[in-house]
Image 1 (tube, rainbow, N blue to C red):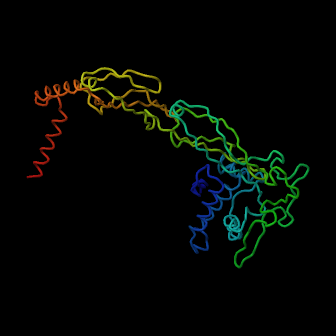
Image 2 (cartoon, rainbow, N blue to C red; image 1 turned 90 degrees about the vertical axis):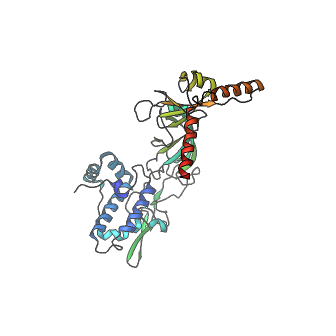
Image 3 (cartoon, rainbow, N blue to C red; image 1 turned 30 degrees about the vertical axis):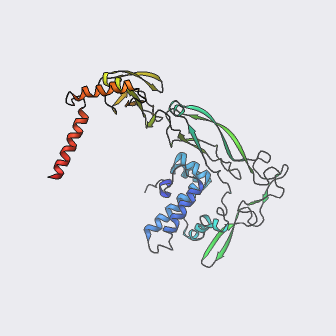
Length: 380
């Protein structure tokens, strides 16, 4: 039977961190453990499948082989002596508590497994102007993170010295403790799970192998990004421990509100103020676009709220496709700060309109006719 995708087994994303993978496995282990599901073959099989997925995805080398070549890559790695995922019922009861719940007692990874840890992934929230999001840009950011100590090259030991194997756990980083029915694994109290002892710590990192620094990075923003899009910078996360690979940096895009345009996917919209005279008699108005100004023809008798469409004046999506449009909503502007003479002219103009039995205001006439029908129906 074909094996399922390990990421789907644990219900995690392909870029999930080590902590997320452990959390997902812990949840499934608590639910499917044989002690909680006696005589349930289905739960036992799911438990085996989850354990196998966890053993691969929690190991940096196996995960890299799986991500690149899938299950075939793991088989090839096993054939080359690299080992492979499996399930041993004799180990299941002790190892599940050592791998997943051992951190409650200060534990780390299972004895005999390399104490190499991948660096944490980082997230950086980047605010962009609309123009930068639409047309792309190159922006420098400052990212504080844990970097490999340059003085000791990440070993944690002072120059001229090296870490030595822990005499308590013999380099495994784990010790076993028997408590009743269970045999638990927990981190070696002497080396704290690293398998090594630093007798002469580095003066720069104080034996940690990593130091916190702020690194300046240039982020290339592709044209068309939108709110919530993420840009992955591989290897720009935190440094790993004991020679582990560096994590990744995810730059999350947030586009600032624009004073004129609103964006919805690949389309833009804006409101265009139009004078009463232009709306009534027709004319042209200047409309701003991201490419410059254009003239928009306003037909005579245009009502407030009418929308005009300018094709190909929107945004070209970052994932491909045709460029969007710009939708211009006409807003007829009421004159303000009128003089006495202007007010008299408007009153005369209004009187001339009413003399024609309201045929110049079809929406107003229709509205009041609807109101009349509503109240007449309510009375009946």
